[in-house]
Structure formats: structure tokens, C-alpha cells
Image (cartoon, rainbow, N blue to C red; front, side):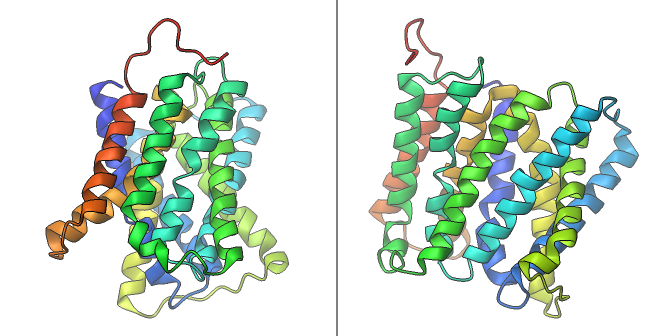
Length: 296
């Protein structure tokens, strides 16, 4: 990756790195449906400000509008609901491990459906090392939580699969579309989809009353949706789904750094080893491949 790509990758890691924590805080007061709708709404508001300043070009082809609407469903509405619902029943640490499986699915799907993001041995080794690092990082947290609600675990894992599918779909169907447009139109389609489907999914909307819940909603909307999706769509087209989705490996690392730096938490061996494995995996995947490393 180039310098600009690394900055976007680090920024996305920071933007999404605390999402699971804020989701956990918010669903203590409001329903998953309410949180997702509000999160997306504030993401849209933030992007409207960006659009007013940048004035991007809008798609001219109907198939591009349709593709962005599909992305809104499979990359925003469905996985957001699955993760938010699942975190009512499982710990955020376990959720981060399950979400860390996104690159495992992405590298396989990208190999078969994209010609410019093929699987090779170095990439596969890097992804496996990174996933191992995520497991090591939250090992103590998931020891007691692995027997938690299986439906909650299944929901977060299914969300990971949706993220992997959508990352390949985005790369394949949105080339040439302004990144700002790629960010806002799927969010609009996602909120519309949720409102229309509310009677079918039992979505009851409720406004937050606690200040901390509002902080969580605003963070998830303005940072975790507005800023994060601008960076994410840029990375998808710049470095490909395989590398872009490896950002999910960094989420537990961000949690460790914040805990040690600001909360005075001890740096146990598993935290140090897990961070090392995650960083090593990112370096391995971004290492320049040799001529004969394809797995074809």
C-alpha cells in the first residue's frame, strides 16, 4: 500500500475500532432497530455537509444507482442490524473475533470474482496469522463467553459474511463513482430499507434519553459511518477487498492500546503477542508478491 492508503487504513481502524463498545453501550437503553436507524441518519447528515463542500458528480447510469442501493442493503442495513442485535447476547470481545473472520471470506470471494485481487500463499498466510492474532488478543474475554447465546454468535458471523460479499460487490460494480456518493447513497437506501421493513422485523423506534447513549449514537453516526465509509470505499478501490477488510483485525488492537494508555490496564502476554501477530499479518499481506505466488 502507498502512504495515502496506510493513512486511510489507520484512520478506518480508529473510526471502527471502538464501534463494538459504543454499540454495547447504546443497546443498553434503545433497541437495535432504533440504534441502526439513528446511526445511519447521523451518518447521512455528516455526508450531506461533505457534499455541500465538495459537490461530487452523481451517477448517470441506472445500473449504478441500483448497485448503490444493493450495497445499502447488504453492506449497511443487514450487517448493522445483525451485529447490533447479536451484541445484546454476546460480549463485544467475542463479537470482534467473529467480525475478524471478514478477511477470511473476502480473500476467497475476491479470488473467484475479481481478476485484480487474486489469492496467493502470502496473502492466505497473512490472513490466517491476523485472525490468530485477534483470537489471542481477546482469548481471556471469550473463555467464559464462548457458550453465550448461539444465535447472537451466528448473527455476528452472518454479518461478517455479508461484509465480505459486499466488499467484492463494491469493487466490481462501483468503479468510477465518487467516493462521497458511494458513501451516502447506500446509507440512504439502508435507512429507507429499514423503515419499509420495520413491520416485518418488528422494529420499534425509540429515542435515547441518556447522555451516554447520545454520545454513542453520534459517534457511530458521524465517525463510525460518515468518516469510516469515506475511507472504506476509498480503500476498496485503491487496495482491493482482501487488504481493505483486514481492518477488522485491528479492532481488538485499538481496544488494547486505549485500555493500556488511558485506563492503566496491564499489558498481558496475550495482548502483546496478539498485537504482534496482527501487525505481522498486515505486513505479510502487503508485502510485494513474487512472480509465482498465485494459488491458481
